[in-house]
Amino acid sequence: MVTLGDIFRQYGAAYRAKYGDRLLPSHRRAMRAIEQCRTPALGGHVYYCEQCDTHHYYYHSCRNRHCPQCQTLKGQQWLVDQQALLLPVPYFMLTFTLPEALREVARRHQRLLYDVLLRTSAAAIQHLAADARFVGGQLGMVGVLHTWGRNLSYHPHVHYVVPAVGWMPEGQVCLAKRAHFLLPVKALSRIFRAKFRDALRDTECWGKIPDTVWQPEWVVHCQPVGRGLPALKYLAPYIFRVALSNQRIVKLARDKVTFRYRATDTGVLKTCTLHVAEFIRRYLQHVLPKGFVKVRYYGFLSSGLRSRLALIRDQLALFAARQPAVEETPPETVVAVARPVFRCPACGQPLRRCANIPPQGRAPPQHCA
Image (cartoon, rainbow, N blue to C red; front, side):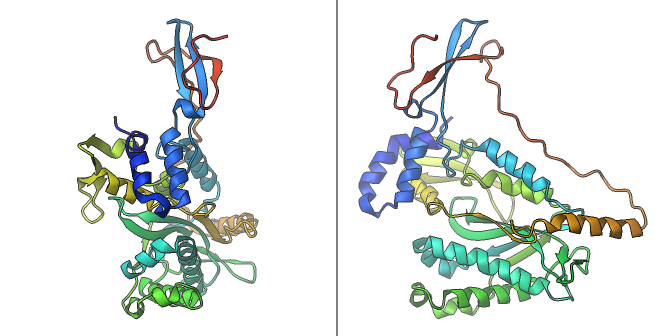
């Protein structure tokens, strides 16, 4: 199977030589990490199978958040942690998409534009949720920034997973006024657009933005997602890595990469073939600025207000006690995944770790202690 690491190791040096100083430091770091991931360059461990009398070598992961083969356990643990925050109410996923006319500006000023996208979309949700016609209180939200389309195109957008319950200033909870409706997306779109425009007005980017971007409606979606867990399970794999997994890479041949993706509009599985330089470019455009926080919590799910969750649960329990009993399907649960036990690929017996491989080692050790 061809991996992203294979592609970067084979073509990365030529790509860096071609683009030189134009390649961002964050892109260089990501390329280097992916090239070294699970190779002798990062060191590792030697395991011994007593049944087969054989040695097996396992090298360390790079742990870069843009590597497709790293941090699966961390993503699963994030999902377990989010499950502990779920409330017994309907949930909605809200999606805010940056207009195409702004994407080139965003590409050149990522830290600023991504931050504004997250802050203003969250503020727009809270602004409308405070209206008693819809919720009447402050919502709790977890927002996740995505920058890709399924074919690795540049498509910045943010997803929010939101419980349909608000916290009022008086210390009481209020439920969304309709079971399958949270907020009107047309009004939400206009508020989002206005807040985004105001946030950029005094920045260095303002003169680079065409006036026409503020005229059409901006794309905002809101859809029910049950009790929230399905939406979190959708987001979890992309919290600690970029959208393309190694399993989606079909082949590398004649300096071209072919990978699978599912069309957003039809759900049909398709393939995309790109020259390797274009493939690398598309992948690297989703590497975030160093230290940028792509997962953010707002309202009563923010770290400073999360103590309100216990009060909200208590009041929801009182509401439920007053309602006629309704039989519900037990909620789905996610169990944390334990670290894997290495087993012999020949006989299946557990392996015993017997030696370390130092980083940058040119060859694995030949004997175990």
